[in-house]
Image (cartoon, rainbow, N blue to C red; front, side):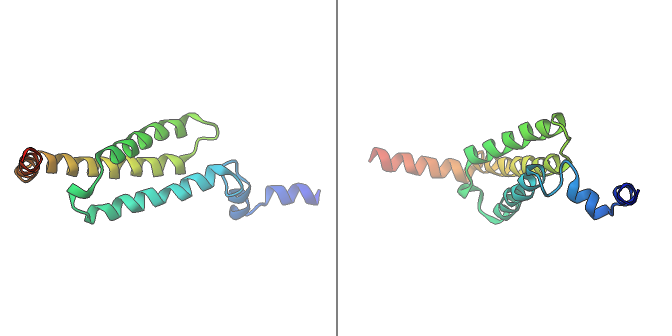
Length: 121
């Protein structure tokens, strides 16, 4: 009888520790490590737009979108994976906007024209 009451009276920490998406599983650690991508994306907000990679940010944006959907389909639903992928998607969308704004600017067009003249000469 003592073992039955011990199971019922688990602390909140023990419930978290032993849950299907707790720290004993990959469902916890994959999203925890993926936050580094969000931190890097936020750090890139300080970089000039001409130094950012369009293809890299496109792949991050698609990764965030695809894995956000996946995290809601799997069992158990992984809300921490969903949250981190929403942030990966969001930071990538912002960076893509910055890149596209720069590439449609007159500064970029003038730079491209100068590079073409150097190649021809």
